[in-house]
Image 1 (cartoon, rainbow, N blue to C red):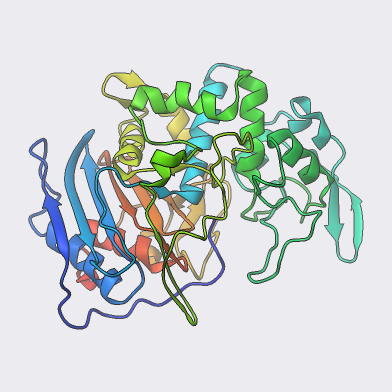
Image 2 (image 1 turned 90 degrees about the vertical axis):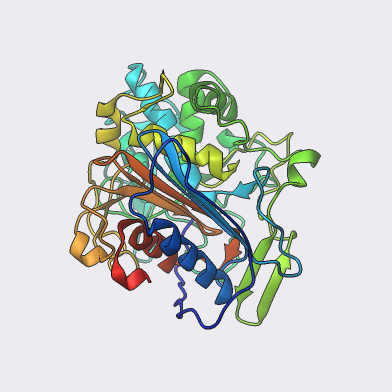
Length: 406
């Protein structure tokens, strides 16, 4: 999830001693000869300025990896990134949940304007917070409202530093035994506006996870395995951390106010193998190679290595704009499709990225974008807080060669 706060990244000052791996894969060429230099300069600056710890970037085109760069901080408490490293991807879970819904739509199992209550009856009689009063919702909650963050459900609590109330639908694997239980509490919680009438970033994909279960007849995680992860070879992407996988989990670098350092104690989700509360908005763990394969599929019109996940028409539907200028100060020039940003105004974005590029980010500073016109993508992974809105802009600027990125 994207927090409200952001930080300003200052310029690189002085040299930094790092261990590094930089590779241009033989299957293709970088976008230009200076790509590696721009990306590694960006990565080093993030470490130097204590925005992230160790970090990794992958860039691909036409289904092939063309650049990979790992920058390790070497600092006490940090861990070198290897091919075994796992990251919590938080809101980069959302596009995966959206793709799962697209596969079910292609099977004809629902329509976008269907009321959610047709499949999850507890959403039949919703209420809306209207000033100091609570009133019945004037419009039904539809599937498309969940896909586009136009349901009226926000994240709770809505303000940083405020603890959630007991009656708020806060994603918790200890509070909820499964997604149905979560949905029942969410259905009892007043919406911020009538469904379909506004935009607010919120818990929609957690509800969609339950909808996937109802439509497919399979547990949410199992359906993701069958429909997306296994066909794409995403062998490390899962809702679960057993003992072996937890040993590969990257430590969290915290730099918030007076707090600075590395920790393994702030997971927030427990990733318990026995949990059935698998939240499609934030719950997945992955690695850079896995997520790069997911991005490559999107960049290639829904197909990778001869395995088709989606039709090109479904990807076009995913990137059709439903809300304009979603975060004008933090993400200028960005509209919203099916839970992905879509660059609508390249001049305001200011990174040299073209119109139509889409992507999203995760709470612990994981980021990606896909360029459907050039069939290319980029993935950045680290594990750090606070979330930094500058990183995805820096990533696009480095890939597209904006001079201000140097």
